[in-house]
Length: 176
Image (cartoon, rainbow, N blue to C red; front, side, top):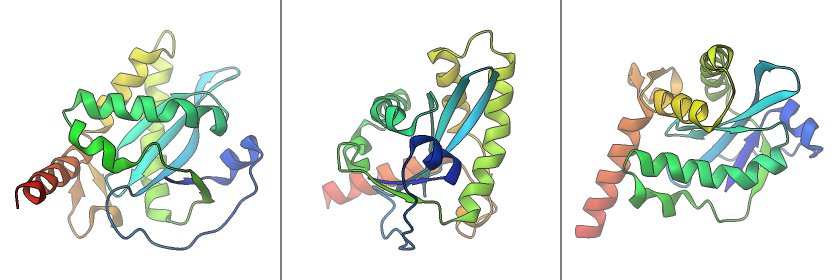
């Protein structure tokens, strides 16, 4: 599993930045972009994971990338189950070895910054940043419109639509 973290996230985790300019070849397993999100509470942060190319968002409480990577596969699998994408979970390769690199795609980072504003707002209005708030954030972001270069020639895409297309392709491949 390829993880592309912002320099701030790498610094906090005390991971030396490593560049890898290779582009992904297949939509799955793809790669996960990671950034830190403040919650508006002293000493409490969250880590935001965004999958390239589906733009699926997963939020994990904590400041340490190393600790978040332990919880991340569980939260990502739960999100996929909530929306009926169980058949795709194996293709995300959550159990594979993790390769951590610096970010290399400004388009993804700009979309992540837009998502970050929404996540910060949800944390601001929540009484406590608990798992129910994280689920609410993920449930809304999977249906949110995402534009720019990541939309692959379209005006906008929604992560749920990209996942449905991948699921349909997987089903057709297993029949044919």
